[in-house]
Image 1 (spheres, helix red, strand yellow):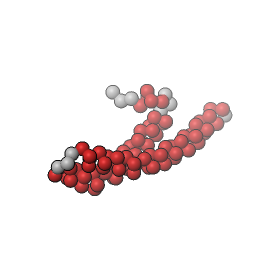
Image 2 (cartoon, one colour):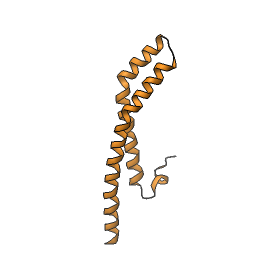
Image 3 (cartoon, one colour):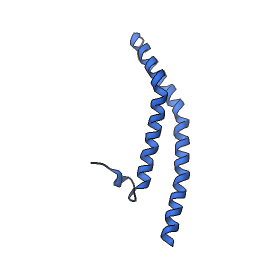
Image 4 (cartoon, helix red, strand yellow):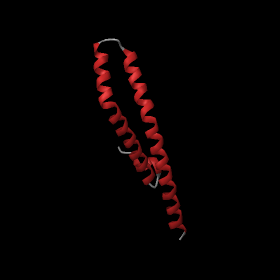
Length: 91
């Protein structure tokens, strides 16, 4: 009985933890997007800058969202492993 209660508490805590983690990731998307936009704009002042800005404007937000989802997926893989991070290491 103690093992099942322990596992239930572990998963209940992780559900809340993952939800807060996802909220934090989503809240960071816009500041990261704007900082990269600013750095691209500041880096060079040539015609290639305009091209980089157009590409970042079009693909930046979906890319940031994809990276946030990938971070959440990696967190879930780590939490799923009974030995933590060391068990998820792929050689």
